[in-house]
Image (cartoon, rainbow, N blue to C red; front, side):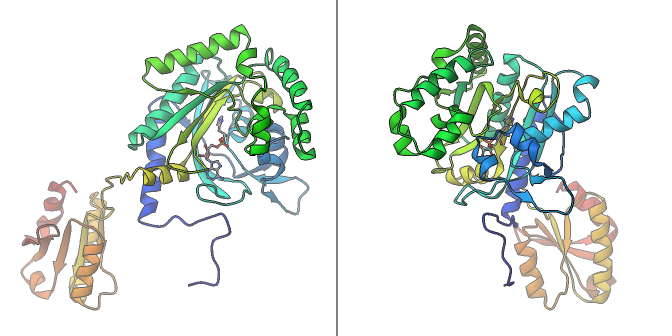
Length: 420
Ligand code: HAM
């Protein structure tokens, strides 16, 4: 036990469950790779203004949850609370939108930071696999991304989740709706803080989780009823493509999401085994963000899927991934000379692509064999002086217990044949 522990709201990823985390990241990224998305990595900290301008001054993420960095220079930096603003900043900075095909399709995987009140499924450092398709306005692109997220979740065996879908309108119809909502909100009994948030972004109030607020919203005007013809048609097409692909969704007219940049399609995947923090992923279209960051008009769409919550969702569904043991062969040497020979064979086997581990600091054969057992290896290699004198090592099948001598020279090819 150390005198230090992980900071509040964070946790360590440790073997063996860390292998599942890696597998989740791989599974969520797989569909993206197969759909032409290229990998992007951006710094974990950025100019604070990128987030306040991009994510929005009325959001909890910006007003309450940003990890600001104290440093010597004059720039104001913050740890990234999400990936979209950074990815778009990087794409604009590198002129990716001018250099190749549009949309520029990008995916990422990494840690994000929000100073939230920690609870199960809500952490101050968490991990997302994200995707952004920059520079195209096409309902098929929105549908593509939603289908790819669904494919990722399904490939992990998840099924107890629902896709919530909404449209937040565009710069034509949203202001009309906004005005109607502002008028409605003016007649409600709201505290100062909430009123201030409503002034910056009244839609945010729809998402307020408090009973006292929700109870007053039953007759609130709904954006759905204010959508312009273009937004309605766009929404219809996204829905049609999802249905054709067999992806079920539920309308959620109150889904506004916790970030201000969304336009038109917005969605969230919610899992029924997670309690309050039920969103395992979410995203949407953000047609105005590029201009908000000083770039040209680049209509875009994307999502972020929560790796931590996907892990919890799998636990809730009792899903255990069939991950091959990291170690296929475990070598146990009895005596100095045998140790040197098996060390050399271990190096050789690894170079030949066979995952091999070696017992270090062996005090007794019994303990070393226990380590072999715990390693999950399919075979143990055992050698003592007598074996070496005969030019063999003992190959023990850890499942059947059967043990056979194998010529040292034939060892690598024998194990390679077993396709470990
Ligand atoms: P978000 O909904 O804020 O969207 O986060 C996406 C997912 O990250 C959530 O659904 C959840 O699974 C996970 N997540 C968020 N906060 C936490 C937390 N404190 N602890 C654990 N997991 C968390 C975005 O971040 C947008 N950038 C998504 C996007 C990309 N929209 C367009 N492009």
